[in-house]
Image 1 (cartoon, rainbow, N blue to C red):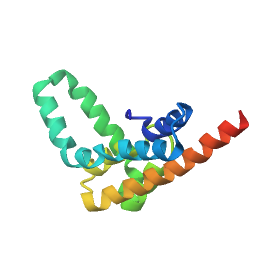
Image 2 (spheres, rainbow, N blue to C red):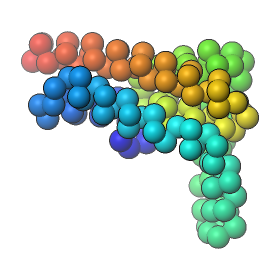
Image 3 (cartoon, rainbow, N blue to C red):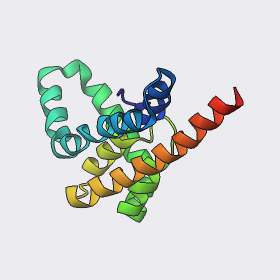
Length: 139
């Protein structure tokens, strides 16, 4: 899994490689979700550490934080439901990892953020499954 594309590319890619659908789905879900709690719990500390040790990256970190705050307006307004909707939209930059970053920067509790992100990832997986198999049958 790679940030920005996560499941949105991982699932169709796994299917295109010939993996059985359940295996591709499981790999995409696990790959999406494993980093989520760590991002929520540790990302602020990681950003502080990076700023102390690599001052050149301060601008990059600030840019990431600003982008997350900008994308997080819906989440701020609707809480866990907003986070679920944000993650469920299968577009680059709206996945689980960005959702986890937003949850961390908005101080959302882990017990609310992780289930919202997981349900959003499951919805995105359903959408990507429909699109992937629809495209395969058309081609």
